[in-house]
Image (spheres, helix red, strand yellow):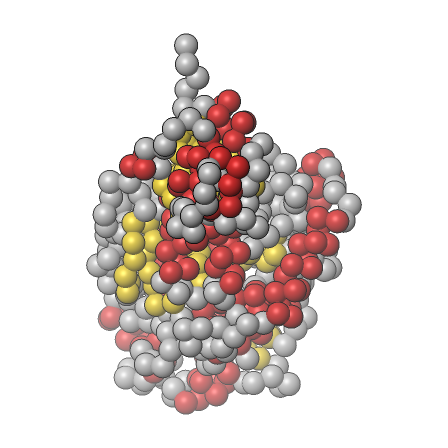
Length: 509
């Protein structure tokens, strides 16, 4: 009985051209030999059916059905860097300004070297055992972080003002909007409490205009003020604990192009504005969301400030739906690679990947070479790829574990580690990922948990930074988020939180 052929991703050696990779098998090397032709030649078994193979020239990969023996033989050939299974990846959930950032980011060798050096430090450092890492992650879960920074808290632990040494954003904004600053904190808490009372886990019920008006009048706020309009958008606890409302004074992400590499985005959701996209799911031509996950992720990144629903981290960022997962929330690595190359071709600024496949090792030297090739391609164009760490309380999965992707773990609204969050030396920052309220198809809202929900908070902050510093390269934005994160115990970079909780205000002030 013949061995079964299954989809594999053949990664050609990046130091060799596609033509050179087939050098030993052909009598004359042509400059126009494609990666597809090269793999066909290297196999030595006749031409691969071009209609059954997926070639991605920019990263030198070919996806083709191979038997175990064919894959093993091919991996030993000169010019082949790796042969990987085309595994299934899944969603990582448990449940108007006119100016735009520059299209081309300035090269930033220093930031790129720092990113690469950090990976080398991890790979060359002592590799902890799975048992040691599990103990460290469990210990991190027991810690309730304490903060003593430039942002003040009330007795309930809510942000309400900045200290005298910082910019008095809340006070000045409140005065300008006609709200006495001593009443602002009480008003915000009152509105949030009312919103939470009326919103359910399954559908959105907007706080009524009558209720809002009564609250505003009771607190002495003019009904046509800026504050009255702003509080109709529900600001989630996740946005509050990373200080997003404070960051909006400096940036709302206008013009930053953010690709949601996921199940697509609901094209007619009233709280979202989508500028385009593409589908890489076989047989599906539209980037419209037929699952729900991608729409939820998109809302966390850039739900509009439009007096309804929720508001995203970067409400003026430009969303693009890159559909790489099917209606079941699953997709093959080859589909995702196609989506990442689209991000490169379309000159995105940020790509969010709230998806992944599991890994069975914490060893930072073990990761997908195909994903890493795509990540390096995007880095070369200044694109920052942000990825969810995973939800099985184990090793960080692919693609987040690849050096060119920014791995994000999850915390709850008390800044405590989410028990499902993956951990390991690859984690760079953490963000809110528990019971996150966001947009959902076709025109409603839902609460979901997962590192899928944490990653878009970081992608949104990256969009805020991109607007604030249009020429910054993705690597510089990445390093900047490391340096401005709020450190969580233990001190310094760790396997649960990375450099700490992403901090939007510090990142853009």
